Image 1 (cartoon, rainbow, N blue to C red):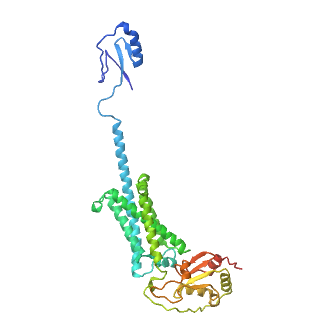
Image 2: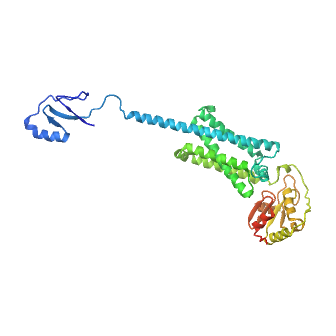
Image 3: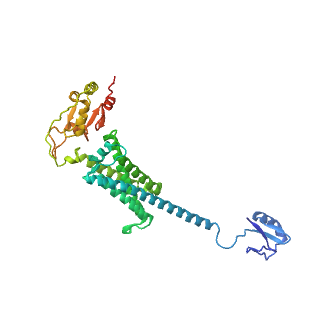
Amino acid sequence: MATFASISAPPPFSCRRSLTHSIPCASQGRLAFFKKSLGLGWDRRGLVLPVKCLPSGPSQDAEPEGHNSSLSESSSSSSSDFTYKLCAGLGGIGLVETAYLTYLKLTNSDAFCPIGGGSCGDILNSDYAVIFGVPLPLIGMFAYGLVASLGVQLTGKNLPFGIDEANGRLVLLGTTTSMAASSAYFLYILSTKFTGASCSYCLLSALLSFSLFFITQKDFGLQQIQKVVGLQLFIAGLVVLALNSSYSSSQPVPSSLAEIELPYFTTEITSPSSPFALSLAKHLQSIGAKMYGAFWCSHCLEQKQMFGSEAAKLLNYVECFPDGYKKGNKILKACADAGIEGFPTWVINGQVLSGEQQLSELAQASGFDVK
């Protein structure tokens, strides 16, 4: 706020100005204009000049700005540390889960499945649980272990091999991106190849992977993500391509048969057919529904036993290995063209049903009118 300091009686601030010359009377008109334009005053003590008095010392406005900057940096560092700790925690949970599944895979043990029952075990022991001959849980254990390790090291700002924090965060983002892409692919497989089946371990792993991905995305911020989005898309595409290549080259044959030669043999259906099973079998035959199976598949035999001996003969059953099985033997072309990935598989009105089905489920899928 401006204050007025008198020439003859200045205030105690260091803003004193003196006027050592007098002003001729003839110049009073011009002086009036001069005073008006500059905001000058005149009293008995002399000419009064408007002087804005500022206290000496550094500017007070500069201090809050620096203080706010420090607070902002401190808040950003605290947020990053929380993100790293969260990644370490979630990565640790995933590490424990995949270590347990790896142990079961290497020891050929059955998993305890709180949700999904037998279907959960079938998924964990299927061909989709192996990638290029390496158990999928082992790969997941390495990925979760890497995330947990990076989270701990980034929190302590103690990265190995001279890696700075920026590059460490980039490695963390790339790892979680690959994990999220893998989980998305496996959820697609679960929904299309294992219809109606459930796997609690698969769903937990997907939840952890997506959570880690979104946490690291949020920590990077929109501007930084825009700079690396091309790298993320490349990583995701590479992961999907590798998974698709692995599954395309593998045969839908249980791993236990990998080194076994089996000549083709017929199975005998011993159970009688109920009137409902006979009617359903005739209906399935009339609409062109097909059941794809293999002679060594125990679930295929159980499916036929549900229908009974008379009704099973009416089914449009396709044997995918009519010449027996041995290493290098290819699946029947009709089964390969249908995209069969496991046994038994039903194709009813274009709908694919994987695994053993109850007769009521087949009736509903085929539109059979139960009277």
